[in-house]
Amino acid sequence: MAIVIIRTLILYLAIVVSMRVMGKRQLGELAPAELVVAVLMSDLAAHPLQDLGTPLIYGLVPVLTLLCCEILISGAILKFARLRTLICGQPGMIIKNGRIIQREMRKSRYTLDELAERLRKKDITDIGAVRYAILETDGTVSAFPYPEELPLTPRQMGIDVSAPGFPVPVICDGRVIDKNLKTLGRDRSWLGKRLAARGVKDARDVFLFSADGVGNEFFQRKEFPPK
Amino acid sequence: MKKELFAAILLAALFFGALVNIRVLDSLGESITAIVDDAERAARSHDLDGAAQAAEDATRLWESRSGYTHLVLRHSVIEDVSDKLGDLAKAAYAGNPGETVGAAKAARSRIESMASIERVRAGSIF
Image 1: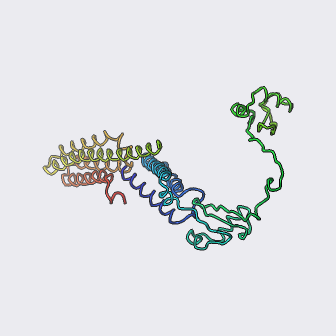
Image 2: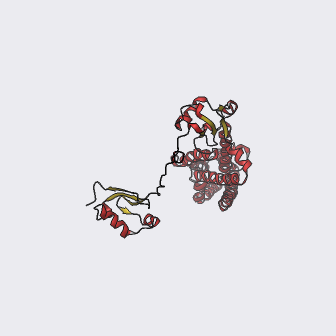
Image 3: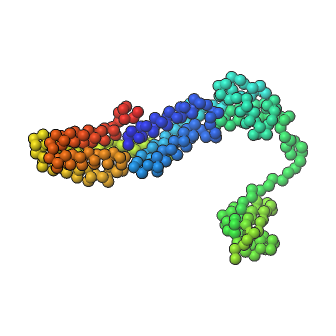
């Protein structure tokens, strides 16, 4: 068992370091340590399931060891900024004042194709429109276009727009959610009136009814109400 | 902070449990090896009834801990040790002193390897 724990710790550290060395482009939206835990846990848990001759403890102990590692490292990262830089890396500026920082691109092993792809996903087709772009530690790109490339806001156009409330579902598939009614500051008698105004007698006939507390509502009747 | 403390305690508990496991397996291995040694000595002095009795005792002791061994050892290892002890008893009952001594050596070697594989050493880790 001690061997299982030590091997798990060694594997954990080896994979965290490997992921860190490989760089940000290999990551999805997980931090390196999180990715390692995700990759290892699924595999470790599968072994005792596949091989009935392996005691369950051979799967449980490594999973618990990883859990401890993850909690301890994430806790230490919160406390020590340097450790965070060491394990998660630092965001890198890959476009500064409209100029692509080639040194940073090379350092992060990031290609122009990948940069263009990430920008397209943000509806930016022209790299020249980007003033700043930052490669985040989780591998995503944050892009900030030049002010003249940004869409106009109602404030810039001098248009007054009323702020909508936050819609919450009140009836979901025929079930009244009392907690959300309370959030809206309403009660069942108010709900009964709103349904009656739409010609509905029973909440069970409603598929979805949501309200935002400032008068906006969404209503849809069930297509096949239960008999 | 509570979570981190819990994780540190859990990790320490896992290591403690692992150390206890090493101790228990060592102790079980030593006890069975001592009985197997008795069987070997008996076989060398042509006391094959004594060797058979010792082999039966070793098997009984090994099986009495099956609840624990099934939790912490691979089932193939457990079966292998059982087979080696069975071979020892079979050789003693067959009345062949040479074969009994050989079977005792094989059983001792398997039991020692079962206990040593859990010990924390570079060879076991890598």
